[in-house]
Amino acid sequence: MVLVGYIPKPEWCIMTFQTASTTRQTDMQTDRALGEIYKIQSQVLLAAHEFLHREGIVQMMPVMLSPVTDPLNHEVYDASIDYLGQKLQLTKSMILHKQIAIARLDVRGIYIISPNVRLEKGVKSDRHLLEFSQLDIEIRDMPEEDFRRLVEGLMVHIFSRVKEYCEEECLKLGIDIIVPQAPFRVYSSKKLLEKYGADFESKISQLEKDLFWITDFDREFYDREDPEDKGTYINYDLCYPNGYGEALSGGERDYEYSVLVRKILERGQDPKDFTPYLELARAKQLCPSSGGGLGIERLIRFLTKRKHIRETTLFPRVPEESIIV
Ligand code: ASN
Image 1 (tube, rainbow, N blue to C red):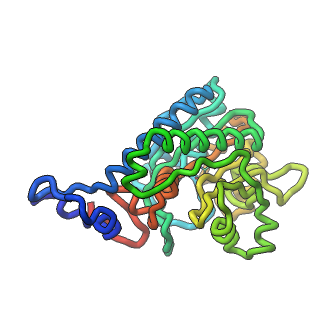
Image 2 (tube, protein in one colour):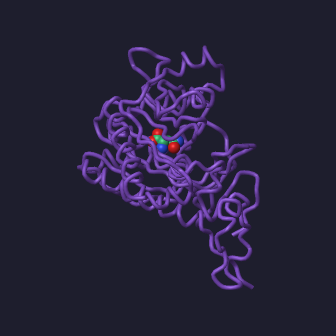
């Protein structure tokens, strides 16, 4: 039995490389498009490391098991295991650990390339995976505007590098890289909601021609609420144009114990589910910071103009589909 033979070959790939030989040996299939996509992904990661290293931001390794993780702003199936009587959750995002780390370490900022597991409920979309990678960044004492400038620099650097160093791969995939123009346009979510209704993010993404920001979302408890203007949130999403949707989400953070507990309760969550994190907040072991997480597969999908996010990975975990290998 040859295992690779059991990976179904997506139709898009056969179509793209109809004339190319897809057989290396009689029983072994190669995937030409994915090979080019992974070469581009390698360049993306190299460029991200280079940019963040130059900025004095330090890489940490991901945490995969913990009694606490991101509550998210939507419901997912439970992804926890029992280890010797302790309930440990698979990481949904590194947010809580980022906040703990940035307060503990004497560094300007940290980043992690982290696997995230989110067992989505009833999600039908071309940009969700149950398991994906997030480039998660957190910078100490940084106002949101400075963080957005940093991310703009990061994106311009990544796109420029891919354009310069992946000419051959882009040609084979039939794509053209357009380097975004910073500063990116900024929209407020409240104004977009008035104009386009609940589905505003996807509507504005279809209309825009370059990367853009949307600010001020009422979502997870850790994103900072303006203390002078309750109901206003100092957070943001970075979005791709041409309908590709969200790229990064993040914000300034709340870090004071009483504020965090109030916001957890306001969201109908149980402070007990966050005990180790809240204990650190109570002991004043959290600090002001800004950060965000950039979805790697979504970035690759946008750069390589793939229709579905599944086309960016050899081992897609697509909501409501069984996992082959
Ligand atoms: N990584 C995001 C952040 O830094 C959180 C998330 O992915 N839910 O805010």
